[in-house]
Image 1 (tube, helix red, strand yellow):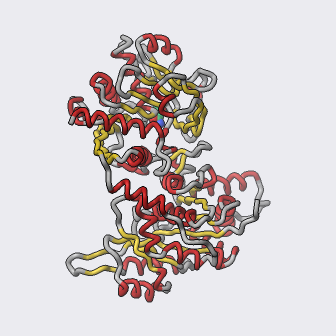
Image 2 (cartoon, helix red, strand yellow):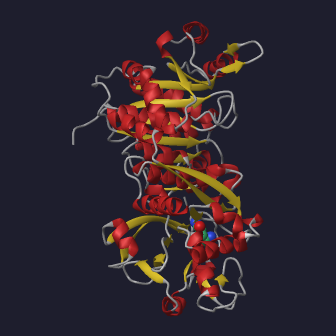
Amino acid sequence: MRSRVTKYIFVTGGVMSSLGKGLASASIGALLEARGLKVTFLKLDPYLNVDPGTMNPFQHGEVYVTVDGAETDLDLGHYERFTRSPMGKVNNVTAGRIYDTVLSKERRGDYLGGTVQVIPHVTDAIKERIREAGLGVDVILVEIGGTVGDIESLPFLEAIRQFRTDVGREHTCFIHVAPVIYQATAGEMKTKPVQHSVKELQAVGIGPDIILCRTERFLTKGIKSKISLFCNVDEDAVITAKDVDSIYEVPLVFQAEGLDEKIIQVLNMWTGQPDLRQWERLIEAQRNPENEITIVMVGKYVDLTESYKSLNEALVHGGMAIRAKVNIEYIDSEKLEDPEVLARADGILVPHGFGARGVEGKIRAVRYARENGIPFLGICFGMQLACCEFARHVAGLEAANSREVDPATPHPVIDLLPGQEEIEDKGATMRLGAYPCVIEEGSRVAAIYGQREISERHRHRYEFNAEYADRLEQAGLRFSGMSPDGRLAEIIELPDHPFFVASQFHPEFASKPFDPHPLFRAFVQAAVHRGRDRA
Ligand code: GLN
């Protein structure tokens, strides 16, 4: 392997959250990859949770699961979808994880009696993680979560400030993302928020090389030169990050603004021009759909659809593959009394979830899809509840349930594996990461995947209870994917239904715009057929 000098891009955000820093980082990664560079990412999150696995999806959005079983921030999903770089445990580090490392070392006596301090011990631990994540690539994008000015992000900012001195100026590039607000009454673009957040950054010793301005409209030359003057950056380093209809347009918009060119210049690198033809084709296909369908998602976290980020994207990818525009409607399963509201759906999706709330609504949705021949896809909890629904209404096992939902159920169709009850810690104790699965020949999913052995990502505690396999099979349920030892049910399907498939794993994490996941593609295809039949 040729030895590489890793270049480091640090991405910070100012003024407020939700500026799309993650998407910006992912898009920059895509542009650099299109220039032939090998890239990777690191997300540094300033909160004290050791990982996002225990965080409430209502607050934090989706927990993204990597192949190696890390529960990570949803930005890692953007990174994987936009590039070829595989994400894993080393690519997301929280302040909690850093402190955990430092404090364990302190308890072991590794600091030999020294006073343990934020500088240098915490900052050194952060720098070590940055170096580790950047091994073997040309460029690593390090995104700092939170907003500049927060107390919590200070150790991270201090660490990256030092980093520039450690590795040399020409090996680092600081990009700051901040909003330029259009004020309708004055008819003006306001640059003060940008100026103030750059001042915050300068106060901790960091002068950005590039400023990415989130705006509704293109920045004029006048605005750019104003920001350049006040914020001490080159005029061609002030980039418009304009709102777009599709997230997959962002790399193209950035390229047109000259962002990647500027980065290459700051990092003192030489590459060819990026080849963005596949991105252009993607956008062209997305803008000109031949069909339009509605997928109804019946879940619990419908007020924060960020909780279903990867699912949403996987549905969009499935649509792009067959030129279908996928509209996603969310229904709160707790409010789903009359399933007739689902009649308008071309496809019904019951996603992952935890706990008893809203479960009966989800079961009603499964039943409606099954009885009315509506394409159905169940993901994780969605598969578990599909098994319960089938057990209750087809196999005659009254009150069948998951032990998680009803500990006293007479028919625990979904249960913990023996020995699992004793686990008391909640963090990182689920079946996590990629596991192999063997697909049954002749099944629908065998045709969908086109291969017999697959590997998919998991995140759950409960499993299908094998004691019920015969009963459900006799009643017509097909277990079409199993763990290689034949003990764990991974995929179920109904042979006499237009499309009824559910998986214990999370296929959505593996879907990419240029490589849509076969299950989502097939599901969207089935929904298009239903749409046509109804028309
Ligand atoms: N709550 C279920 C379990 O723990 C399903 C989890 C999920 O849907 N990711 O097994």
